[in-house]
Length: 407
Image (cartoon, rainbow, N blue to C red; front, top):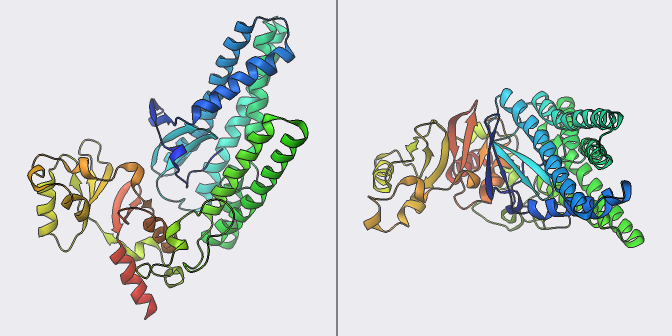
């Protein structure tokens, strides 16, 4: 399952696992109950039913190892997304494995429909390839007389990866199939926002259908799988709700579940109505070539830079070794630090970290960017193109272009 546009607490990295093909890989604590559930269901239900006669310890050892192999396959699915995205010029923050699968975290939106299609299709293709190779492996192991419990475990991995690949092809945004649907509509209509709304609408319908099927399965059969299916449906529904473009601020938040962005469901006179920004892109509002402060610079030095600068109120924070943007600091953040500590505290210590940053591409619709900014503490957006910082958007920038649009 894949949702690269939404970041929730459950999808944040809690434990860093290392790097694979240069991509940072981590896991959230919500992965642990999923792992335990899969290992338990294999050791107690699936394997004893298919291949009886083994000891309980054998079932548990194979169950745990099979669960590890399953998440390795899931990692391969997400890694394929990340590799193709990087080849298409997108920045990948990393991969996080969590309760409902995994997420490849990318900076900004897709630049065009072709990139969207390529990045989306490679994940299910990888899962289906693993399923095919697993089927061949299970057949070969059975042919050479391998242990029945090993053959059953490999066969289960083949089936579950096949199901993962097929499930992700459902036209339900933000699943890969929903992104394929959006890519096709985007290519046909030449309008990413309209395509996103249509794909999210399909995601809402399928999410509600999964919830209904899961509840029926649980009530009629008492199956825990039904509850799991309903939970997945709820996730798809909530993510599809969040992916939809927000209505006018005075309108109530749409659909069931938590409101995706309270800043759009609560009227705020300081936030321009989305209709004023209609048709504008991030590049229309950004302040180009912003000053970047090194992460090792002190707060006192940064405040002096802001005071001497041409009206800047925020500074992107860069890592001198890698050249990457690693944070963002503002006048408000710097001013909160007591004066006696400003000469001994680095900017990085008081800056918003990568997980808190709002990042977009120059061609992204400004209403969407403004909505995402409004949901954050700093209300800033870094504009990235080709892996390079090209601009920054602040509330004053949004207000300026909104005033021009109003005229």
